[in-house]
Amino acid sequence: MPDPIIVTHGLTRRFGDTLAVDDLTLEVHAGEVFGFLGHNGAGKTTTVRLLNGILTPSAGQASVLGLDPMADGPALRRQSGVLTETPSLDERLSARVNLSLYADLYGVPKAEVKQRVDALLAAFDLAERADDKAGEYSKGMKQRLALARTVIHEPTLLFLDEPTAALDPVAARQVHEMILRTAREGRTVFINTHNLVEAQRLCDRVGVMEHGRLVAIGTPHELARSLVRNVSVEFELAPGSVEPAMHALQALPIVVNTGQRNGTIVVSGAEREAIPDLIGLLVNAGVRIYQVTPQEPTLEDVYFALHSDAEVKQ
Amino acid sequence: MNWRAIWAIMRKDLRVVLQNKGVVLPIILLPVILFVVLPLLVLLLPAAMGSTGAGSNDLQELLAMVSPGLRAQLEGLEPDAAGAVFFLVYMLAPMFLIVPIMVSNVIAADSFVGEKERKTLEALLYTPTTDGELLTGKLLSAWLPALLVSLLGYVLYSVTANLAAAQLVGKPLFPNLIWSVMVVWVAPAAAAFGLTSMMLVSVRAKTFQDAYQTGSLVVLPVILLLLGQAVGVIYFSIWLTLGLGLLLWAISLVLLVYGKRTFHRTELIARL
Image 1 (cartoon, each protein chain N blue to C red):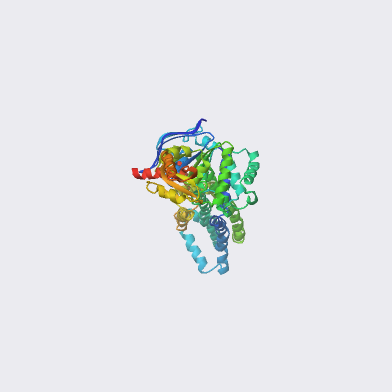
Image 2 (image 1 turned 90 degrees about the vertical axis):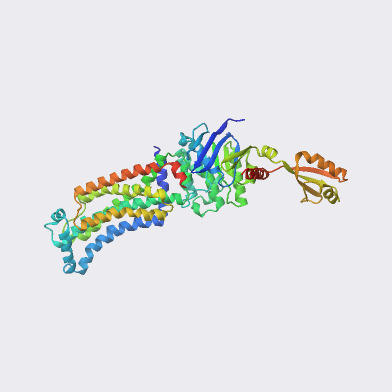
């Protein structure tokens, strides 16, 4: 496994009586796309601020790119790029001017500024309206411009805070493709999101935050296997077998529905270990089965499993 | 200090400011009113109404009230010429200070509070600029334009006043020592006072309008100076002018030291 690029130990941030980030211990490795999942107010944005040295921790330590965010903030921020939750663009200025100014702020070599700005405007599909004021852009264009600004200095580590919040599906897909392209270029990407589909699509590993605490971490698959006990299974049956199958299963503590396709049923709420027994029960009842497809739990299932656990604990 | 980053912050702030009519209008209108309209009104209105009569008697009464030091400066001049010198050189001198104070104040309001209001500050805080560079860029983006506007205003005022008073006084009133000291010593201090006081206002203000309205209170000391001179308590001698500059620099320094304490990324981000 590559070296960790972000390491935290007991990182904590308190605002008055509120613990925004509570004892966060975490490692993110070079080259991975890491998703930080949680509700609004779970502590995700505060974590990004702590990791970039623009907020002081109340306790604990962090090391990002081998640097202490508080002691080496400027050196660290020269190598990291942050897409803030709102695009944070100067809307009275054009896209070109926005990018040029930030190139200067990030210390992009003067000789390269124009070339790099032009390349980014083209790559993010903004070249045709490069000299329009950013305030005249659609939300999707603003987000693309903000993303272009985030990579103007070619950072090795990217933090993206809710990159597709408030975007329509088409614009969100465009942004996803740009993030994947950025990740393929070898950058480490840390994504804050409450969009579970987004996390599932983009992230190698995810951490789930709940009231400032990291309550789970792993690949989406690992989390699903460890946290979601009940699975859904789709049975494709021979013609005329749906009714007998539903009759055979009705006494069990599971939910049985007809599937979306003709001749299929979907069993929900059964544990993975019970699948062979279900198949045996149906075969014994004379039901002819063509295909059995366990449906992998999604991050959404993981998230709600964790969330309901947390509510029970409260 | 990374001067390229500081220059980028200044350019950014000034480009944004120039798009804001709420900032640009006062910057243009204030000098025009104070440096062109007001001296013309002061000189041409009495002439249009007739140089003798009630207006002239009022002037005599006013000149009788001024401090002995100022009265000595006006001795030997014809009444109308004394009136012109009194208004153009002395009475309007405090008014001149309104320009650097207000220009730096209004630009600083847009730079410090407007940025917060437009939600553009966070991206700036994530750049590798240090807190010192960020503050320097923001201070200079308000201070330098205030100096430039003051200097241009002074030139404009000198030309207007010299033309308007030429017949009455018979010689150019400007440039003169007091106003030269005002421009090179007091106006920079006044601009510093205007922007450092806005630094403090910006800690609490949520919107540009809030900041602008609260910040406008910084012209109160100028009004006091104006009244003080009108009722004969003080007059703008060279020593008062030098002392006033020193006082404004000292106050600005105190405000800067105090304001700098709150100007840290970690504080700014917590207030967003």
